[in-house]
Amino acid sequence: MNILLATSEAVPFSKTGGLADVCGALPGQLAQLGHSPAVILPAYRQSWCCGQPIEELGIDFIVPIGSKTVTGHLLQSTMPGTDVPVYLVKQDQYYDRDGLYQADGKDYIDNCERFVFFSRAVLEAIRLLDLNVDLLHVNDWQTGLVPAYLKIEYRGIPRYENIASLLTIHNLAYQGQFWHWDMLLTGLDWKYFNWHQMEFHGYLNLLKTGLVFADSINTVSPRYAQEIQSPTLGCGLEGTLQQRRDVLSGILNGMDPSHWNPAGDPHLAADYDVDSYREGKAACKAALQEAVGLPQRPEVPVVGLIGRLCQQKGIELVVEVMKQWAPNRDVQWVVLGTGDAEYHKKLEDLVERYPQKVAVRLEFSGPLAHQIEAGADMFLMPSRYEPCGLNQMYSLAYGTVPVVRATGGLADTIVDAREETLVAGTANGFSFGEYSNLALAETLDRACQAYQDKEVWNQLVTTGMRQDWSWNRSARQYLALYARTIERMKQAAHV
Ligand code: ADP
Image (cartoon, rainbow, N blue to C red; front, side):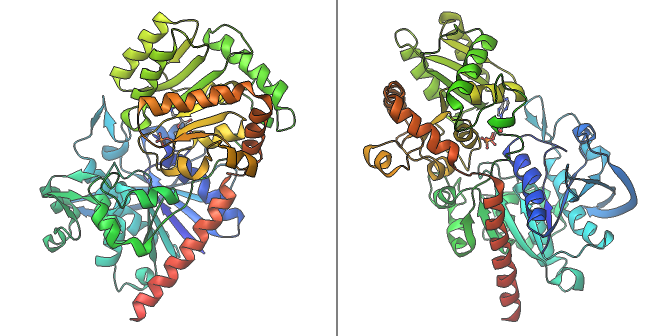
């Protein structure tokens, strides 16, 4: 199968979040399974530091953007360690900037124009590079226009006629919503600006456009695929998603074992696997405590948290429980993240008041993330919503027991330790349903009690470490979905 993955970010060329991890890992897995993927993405300023050689192809193209035309160039590279081609769309006025989508916390005002250009470039690149594409896999709002152009402007052109499209939603909360006059930039007829297609409460909505025009839609976990059809997590698009529920499914993201494997992790004080985790984790815990300035006490449970410090991740609950527990509970907390200033301040206050118990690093640090995954005993993810989540999978692999709110991918990966699940041997962590301080505190309390019971804890750790959350499994599911999508498109063409 020939798959073209169009994305606004992919590791190692560019990254702001989980989207980049997925688009960086999936193509290599598809290639290993005998298929022919290629990736296309913008050439940002940060792409030049990716460590991969990037070559000029000498191919220029011109596309219409509103009433003007804009020129772009195609560059080529490969995904590290593979032959998977990566095409980069160079247009320095749009992409040669410090940030991918924003500067100083403010979105670029021409984001719509930047991704109209990229979406048109994706379709032109197919012709210019002479690519045979069976399936065009687009991701999030930045490429939401691609399925629309494919169905409207490229319909009837032989090379494009049999291309099926799949849109993956990585986070429904980011929709690419712009004022209605940006419709002119798309070059599409105003007749599509209606509430069944591209319009959302008077605005142009690029994610909705993709949801309407793609042949199939998926999200990054089965539970999130269900949740986004309800008003609570549907972000206003639940109606559109309900209408398309027959073609909507969920596939969990995978973990990249070449980056996340405690048996060969260059960032750790000691390597370990499921048979040697006791000694290995003890060494990593002591190294972590030392690195972040906490007392080196092997017996005290260390609770870790890594991530964007924002509302989605439930940081408000964490801060409240830390405040309640820090004065009298013997627990150490290690937090790594960046995000809202309000949480930065609250966490810094806690460090000041309880330096023996709370360590906070307000930065982005890959090595420290690995050290926390290995050195902590428990890992906290009390998210309001979580399309998939990767850290809980890393935690399972590193023998660090996840404590999570049962939402989205967290609900699909973590089995709460209860009598029945312990007996069945399926328990691998702790989870709660209600989004409240009380529910988090109760669940963390259950986890701390279990931590004192060596047998139960050993069972939880080893169950998690033996599970396989690698990309291989997810890639097979994507291939099955691609095949279904192509079949569906063929059938629709014959009606
Ligand atoms: P999201 O994509 O919603 O931010 P995910 O759990 O899917 O959350 O993925 C986030 C990724 O970014 C994980 O690999 C996580 O370890 C990493 N990450 C987030 N914040 C930091 C940080 N401050 N330092 C290092 N890694 C981080």
